[in-house]
Image 1 (tube, rainbow, N blue to C red):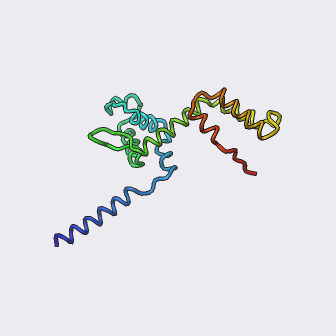
Image 2: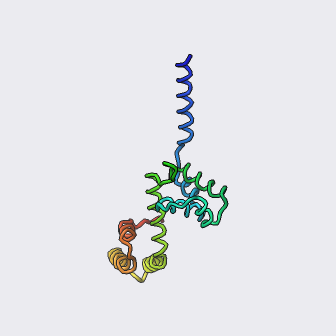
Image 3: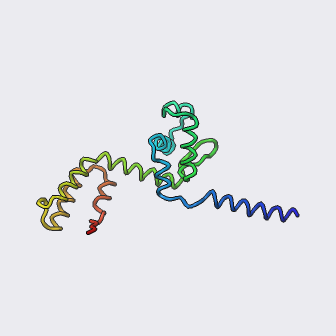
Length: 162
């Protein structure tokens, strides 16, 4: 009888873990970080800034229930986890944090990216693909000061959908 109970408990435990660890999509993660307070909370944890939750709630201007709602969402997405009474980013959380940081970097270069796009979309700016490629490289080199963003821009194939 005792063995039968252990088997049932084990099966129930696996079923709960399976439900708990459902497949998480990009949309789920973006949704969890979609408001500024959730993104600030996630970034604060990712940067290792250890505020007690009352200080953080006060700084963020949210209620305790709003804080826990956001914390539960980013925890359920696997971006952070609680360890020894403190929250820390997970491996997935580190990847997501770097991606979000890159979006911020791109936005800090918004006008430069628009200028590059404007020149490239102008038919008189470059007649041949070779000229366009050379012009693109020159603009990226002169207007973008972030090496990671430069790498993304120079490695992006020119996509065309007609």
